Image 1: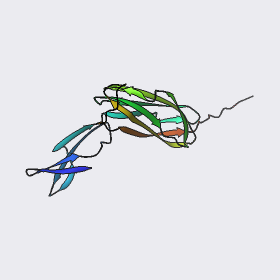
Image 2: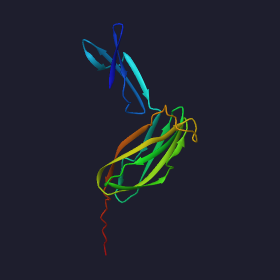
Image 3: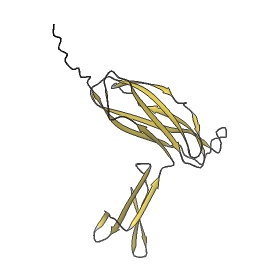
Image 4: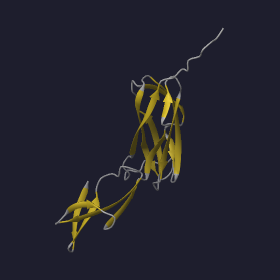
Amino acid sequence: MWTKRLLLSISLLGLISRAKFQLTEGHATLSEETGFGMTKHSANFTTFLPFFMELSLPYSFIRGETLVLKGVARNYMKKCAKVQATLENTNAFNAELKDGQQGACICTNGSATYTWEAQANIIGELSVTVSAETTQISDTCDGPNDPGQSPRKDTVVRTVTVEVLKYEPTVMIR
């Protein structure tokens, strides 16, 4: 994940792999005496993903109810991107895309919203995986694909609790 560069007598670290979140901040240090560590000071870094997917879910819902999953693909690249959003199929729930255009073109600082409706087939923890992937990156929505741009993909995994519908006993007195 890190690469070490020697500059004078100071070791610097560089991030060489993809950041895990949309905005990541950290503080790293490396010395021959103490090794690698995270600290409040030293070499600060901030990363930002120019293309990512957000997913909003409630903490829980009741089995038998319809769960509304809302995903937002965001583009902060300096180019437009055509985007495909997918909700991973699983036996734990049935889902259908209700709103959102597959292949939507999102230009700089833009976003596209996708809404799925799902019904759970289980009770307990339900893992939901949503991905957004570029199918084309270009200067305009109608322009040719830019061969200098590699495809982008972001996947979000969240958990929601599926609860049992609880019935309150009713007492009838005659």
